[in-house]
Length: 205
Image (cartoon, rainbow, N blue to C red; front, side, top):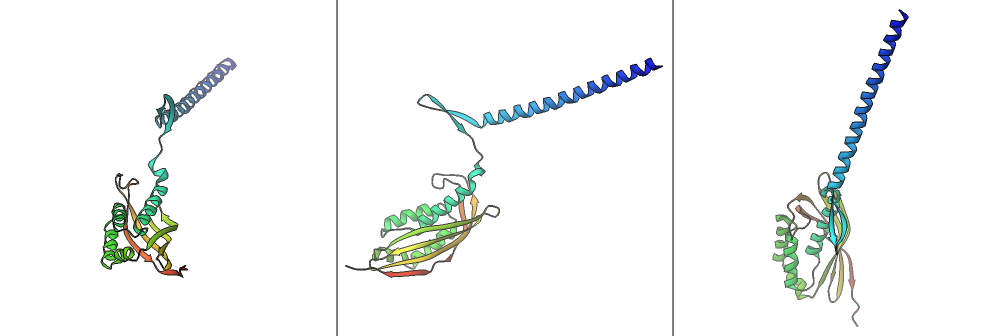
């Protein structure tokens, strides 16, 4: 009887050892497959570029990793094109053409309004130089709503005027082009504040 119990216990022990070995093998296989898949993904994200016959590793990154910086760069570029201008009507027109590639119809509407009021003609006739300086851009990545905060400096022959500049709008992803390299279109753009904060008379010698 004791011999039978001894055989049964040995069979149970063998079964436990075999089951444990099988489970361990499955775990090791799963870890190995996971590691191999990770290495394959990593290798696929790299390409090699030859520079004077020297291989260099180029890393592929997710386009969304740097999207916030691209959005802000597009917003800053648009405001620089739209609000910075010398007393040169041809150059102003060129800048506006570049700005219009980055904004929807709301930008065109504001440009036409300023043009009808003689704003650009006045800048040229008075030899005024306008520069735009960005202070900050507040961007909500969830809603793609943004607020641009900056200053606009208008330098006339006899006076320097500094104006606050606050605008807001949204963003829409579009295909990238040479004229819109970040693939971000500004939508529903409007100026919230643009008022004088400093008027300084130039010293004439």
